[in-house]
Image (cartoon, rainbow, N blue to C red; front, side, top):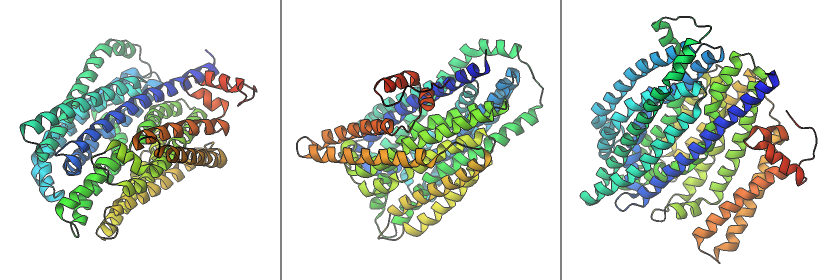
Length: 549
């Protein structure tokens, strides 16, 4: 097989992985939005229930991050490097030792949350009602940790679809079980907000168990193929248990630290917002304000990340294997393309949420519509979040595993200082948290990008990657906004909002094509790209020039 053909196959494999993950993450985020809408509009739950639910969940997320969030990318990186040189036996040994190592870490984290639930809720969060939500979530940490090792192993072996399927399955069950458990608890307790919040988090634990079961079953089925590859392994060099554990922790710890910084961003809000607001608001008002931020705003601004995380996840094993084979140019092309796509995802989402903030809240949360300005401000973080996500994945794949952790830490310290300073000012209040997040994301993105361009040469042109996307976004914003204004007095506001959003998507896509933001080679990198190029050539958007191989 020719070298060119091999590269083409790898490129298609990379984009296939991206597409599978993107679809999976889209489904996950939409389902997450469904149960968030349900909880926010549920009688007896609302913004106060969201405050209890989210505060407990953010502590769980922090311990989960410490024990497992960095694991998939770390294991994926190490396994892909071994597989790239034909050492399947070494890759499997890393997997087995990782299961043992992180199983112990996960068990410790589970016990910390279970035993410390009272102290965390009463002293740290100052939301006593969150204790039961923490207890309900504690068993999930152990099982998620083991599942993360399995996902990392499959990702490293370019079986990313397994990760996507397990995550989708988990979210499907989480959505269904959240509704079922909360309804049962609500009926049996006469709409007790505290117990319904605990029930919602219990649904998370149950869904994690089901996802873990799926991954374990698949591994048992796939084990025969693994055994054959191990038997045919080449370049195997035995390493002691201690050395392998050190290698795993050396890679996973910085990646985990980076993920911890991201999770701490929300923990800073859970700790500082209510505490700061109580200086000039009642406790109930403070919790309600935090509920708006954590339950509605954070849910909406993280939706675009579901499209983009596919690139960040697929980049780690892809770049690691490319660098292991000495294919630096191939790694550079994938990073440049992924950065461009992140910009194309982040810009319209940022502007769209700023323009239609109130309409989106009215559409999704008709019984709790507060938070328009907070959503507009927080939307600014989207573009910097998606870019940081991609850049950090690229840096991890390139071996710069400490950089994301360092840049995230600097951004986080900035946010903590801003939160403490601004939230307690009555004229600013909860908006101080949004300002802190904006500056945090800008700082972290800028520092990571500087390191990236110093590490590898990228083909990122200012006109192509910035000016043209901005022009397309402006055209989209103007057309969709005036579409809404035109329809507002004719049909219901909700229908007008939905139509305006659809118009925005169509106009944005057409603008990108008209401006030729993606050239033929880049279009062919996406699934069915060759067919799209052929259609565009036939309608005269792209000339029938040289075809890229």
